[in-house]
Structure formats: C-alpha cells, structure tokens
Length: 185
Ligand code: FES
Figure 1: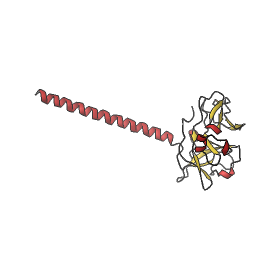
Figure 2 (figure 1 turned 30 degrees about the vertical axis):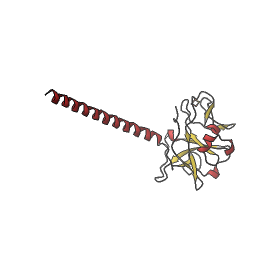
Figure 3 (figure 1 turned 45 degrees about the vertical axis):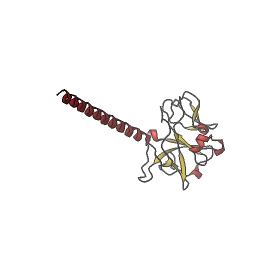
Figure 4 (figure 1 turned 90 degrees about the vertical axis):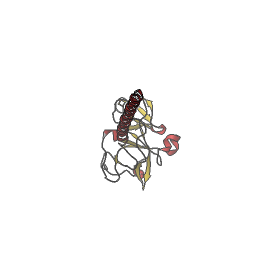
C-alpha cells in the first residue's frame, strides 16, 4: 500500500514537472516571438527607400547617394512593397570612404554605405545631420561616429546607434539582416 502511495506521489510530481516544463516552454516561445517581432522591424531582404523629399517611397540606389552625405530611409518589404514607417524602423544611411571604416563596420557596409537606426539612444529623437563626419542628434547634441559602429563621440547618449547590415542588389540598397543592438532608448 505504502509502495502504491509512493508511486502515485511520484506520478503526480512527474506530471507537475512536465506541466512546469510545458509552461516554461510556452513562456520561452512567447518571449522569443516578442523578441523576434521587435527584431523584425527591419529584416534581411527589405529594400531601403527614401523617407523624405521628392523621392520619398522610392528605392535608394547606391549611385544616387552623394559621398560624405546622410539620408533618411525606411525599410520596404520586397514582396508586399509595404513600407514600414514605424519610428523604430527609421534608418540613417551615410556614404563614406570605404578605406576609413573599421573592420567591424566594413563587414556590414556596402561600397562605403553604412546604415544605422536613426533613433538617438539618449531620449529617442531622430538624428538628422552630419558634422565633420559624425552623425548628430539635434535635440541635445549627441554625436556618433559612423566610421566606427556609430560609437558615441560627444553628448549625453549612453551607447552607439543600432547598426543595420546592408548589401547592394542590382544597385539598390537592401538590408542584409535586422538591427544589431538596441534601437533607441
Ligand atoms: S535625444 Fe539625442 S541627444 Fe538627447
């Protein structure tokens, strides 16, 4: 009888462990899904399009980006042609001399073009200009060096802009993956 009771207890405990495991797995999957969703604001294969000006919504061609200049972009899904205008999807694209990029930055660049999240890591303003080769946030003057992974070189920002790996496809600028690092604040 004591043996039976012991086995019953073990069975019950076993079921509890299985239930706990299933709950844990469910939670992990749910969390993973949330992470995947937030990471997919931009995804590999998205076409970068002009965010502003006469060319807004049109794909960005590498040859059309002047050297030492900055422009704002949004990602466009290659098949649905939907443009993601979510604030966290805003991208800043900068054309630099490829020889001036450090090795890590060059890995994610395409012919001197480098891309980062446009959202400042201080208070979340959109960065907006280049000054002496650095990306500048207009709100409190944070400065990021696009040659070196957009590391902070001035102002109150606590960390670098998230990087976006890019490549060229028939001359168009295309995301080669999602953002690397945290977007914004
Ligand atoms: S929000 Fe960019 S420097 Fe403060």
